[in-house]
Image (tube, rainbow, N blue to C red):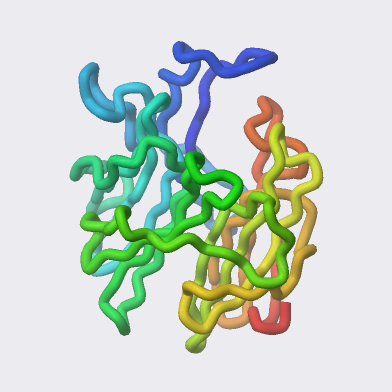
Length: 254
């Protein structure tokens, strides 16, 4: 699942260009060669007057209990989170806006079945440079954003922006892949790793996993992980592509 930005100018995005921002879907048999879904966009922008009429973006999907569950961003000038579901991964039904924050991006959700809670890690631009937060909910939609907890990573230098969080829970530990962020285009970005015992208090483990930004990690098999990421100095750039790195081993040895 990915966002497609449409036409971009050589300088700044305009409101008209944002109206083409929508969510697409692609599939692969090997994780390398991908085929775009002919049904794209699988989560289009909303109709005129709806909260997401100017675009849908930042999709994050988990599959559980026979349902594809997607959290996504909507809007342009006022950016918030929405939720959608699908039985086949292609035809999604929007369930509505779930936040009223107005300045968010980079959503990632973890369902901790042991505690019965969903945890959303996200970025709130109104709090920069300390814009990383975690909100919790007992279901997919009722996140308590009013009491979201700010996240700070022990061992990192502040004030600075660390975002693009992707969190995995494995073997009783929490692993956060994230990056340092500097506008424009993340010129010196590296994908990094932090570890936590509770998903809230984090300590830096490795600040140089690879050069790039926005690393998303999939567990493909026991001891095998795929990371999809963008190249350094290409964040929101018109020639940005998607790259793959492979790791064999245990996460606590990264």
